[in-house]
Amino acid sequence: MIPLRKLPGAAALVATPLALAVGCSGGYMADDEDPSGTPGCAGVCSVDGGAGMDGGASPRDAGMQADAGAPPTVVMTIAEARRTPFDGRVRVKLEGVVIHTVESPDHGPRSDAGTPVRFWVVDPARPTQGLWVEKSPTDLPTDFVPQVGQYVDITGWMQAGAGDEQLEGYRARIANPRVFDNSLGRLEIRLIDTLPVPADNRAPPGFGAADGGWLRPNPELLGTRVYVPGPLVMTDPSPSAFPHVPALSNGSAFNGFEVSGGILVSSRNTSGPSPTDGGPARCDWQDLVRGDGGVVVFPNGIRGVWDTYTYVPCQDGGTEDLATCPKDPAGGRVPGTELPDGGFGNAFTHVLLPQDCDRDLAGVWDAGG
Image (cartoon, rainbow, N blue to C red; front, side, top):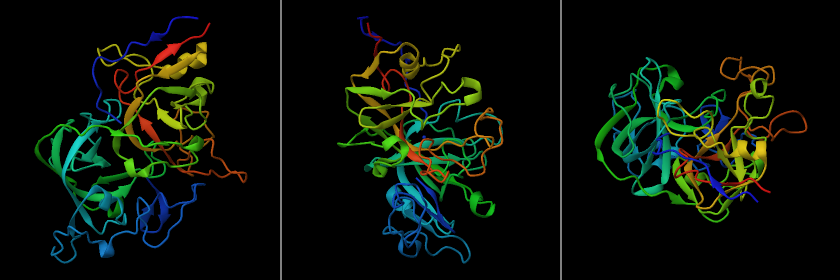
């Protein structure tokens, strides 16, 4: 038996990332859908299966006396915002939320014009309520740079990502209103102060059982950081839900793995070549198991952002580079949930998104004897 070995991890926490499918015209819904993933609508379309808001109003109504023709601004909690129809008719204000994770430099803040920055916020008074934020360069203030711990007010419009948006398609977010009518409205962020980020939410019993991607577990924690206590064991280093680019990897690379309890864990921010510029180290736990066998254990559990995941294949079925190929017009889906008639059973599922190798994804590999 080879002694247990711990992979070198990052020296610092990386602030990075990853629920809805189109349900009916003018709105979105998610967790009241059939487990097969077939979209449906029951009453008002909403993001988390709630009944929606009565006339778009909130128990903390504000700004309903707006000028005629202008969308009313309504102060809401994150949970209330997730239940509003995603149709652009209501301008939502989230008061006093804290930025808990910013997307990695590979996918988030950049200096080139036209690239949005994306981050997650949590309500410190309601730490199980979190949400993804998408800020375009023209949104206000234009020079705002998101940082973990910033305490802010955010005013914008609730919406879902397009189905052809790689990895984040269908995901609930607050952003500017261009998706609705190409209007000139802007997302607005007001920096109030800095606050400690709330502790990661401890996963409840049975957390995250996605059944290979067929289910969408624990929607009540979407957009927040979650701690799943250990020990956890990697049960599948190559789940069908996490394919990589087949033409470039001969089908051998995957963008995540499965651990005890059926939890899907994305390796988007923790795998790949180690950077040469002094950035964080990477930990390719799944590659170790696929290449050399053995077992990977996470003795202290796993942490990360809990949010949606989808995969948009190339139009030819997946033999091209995902970064450049024409996308399948059918949009994102969870591989491995195909139906007998050739359709796909689930448009998206929920996964854990660890942000670094030191704290979020610290593991031990036993290569076997």
